[in-house]
Amino acid sequence: MSECNHDCSSCSANCGERQQPESFLEKLNDRSSVKKVVAVVSGKGGVGKSLVTALTACEARRRGKRVAVLDADITGPSIPRAFGITEKARSDGELLYPKVTGTGIEVMSINLLLEQDTDPVVWRGPVIAGVVKQFWTDVLWRDIDVMFIDMPPGTGDVPLTVFQSIPVDGIIIVASPQELVSMIVEKAVKMAEMMNIPILGLIENMSYIECPDCGKRISVFGESHIGEAAAAHSTKVLGRLPIRPEFAAAVDAGAVEGISGGDWLSGAVDAVEAL
Ligand SMILES: Nc1ncnc2c1ncn2[C@@H]1O[C@H](COP(=O)(O)OP(=O)(O)OP(=O)(O)O)[C@@H](O)[C@H]1O
Image (cartoon, rainbow, N blue to C red; front, side):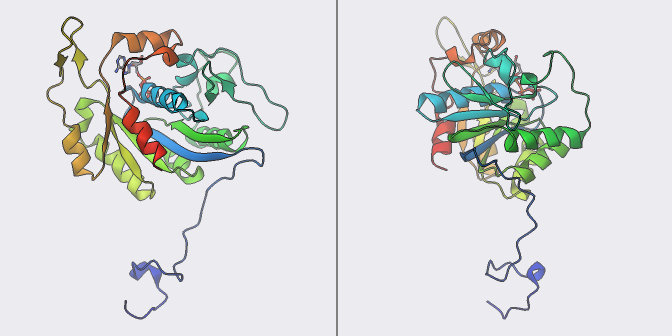
């Protein structure tokens, strides 16, 4: 190593001299504890990010973890509905209390605070980002082993603030088969790299359908490119989820915890456990 000239911008060595960039990380309140935080992201909306978040949380819970889901998708919250939570969250005047699902997953979402679930959230980006920060700082997260954050889609203002203010340990990227061959996944990957957050891997949703008679897999969008996409970004394939009408029906009925019969997302939970 050449002699130090104390100009960190022209040197890549990670020595004790290196000045740390200013941290915008928000602290949890004194009564809360969260061991690991995993953000579930997608390049665009409607690819099944919320379904994957919910199913991964269910699988982690089945493995005995204390699990939380923070719904950071403020303008399109889908988590309470998927878990069948209809009651509002309450506060003790200091902290907000998450609602607990049938299997014991702790959930916070804007829909647990709005008077009507159908009320639109017409707030500007900084206000929305502020609410997500408060979901981290002002909620009682009791002894949580792993918190999954259902992120707003895309790589805009709100995801950026979330990554800057919540100490995210890893990112799971959800993509549809078409997205895997587009630059949308690359944008999500680059954002994670810019934020210095490890990418745990990719999940392909709506990857194939299964013939109800013979069980044959049909790749409706052509052969999967998830292996190539993962290799191109030096990351792992965590799972592939089929298109199943029962998934959509279970989400609509608030019964996502009742979905069983597949280990589609066990790779994702293995990666979370390895963190
Ligand atoms: N593999 C699947 N099989 C059947 N239905 C699915 C599947 N994945 C998602 N869906 C359904 O598609 C719809 C959109 O999924 P979801 O809300 O999870 O997407 P999203 O990426 O979180 O969207 P947004 O970011 O816009 O909230 C939901 O009704 C969901 O139940």
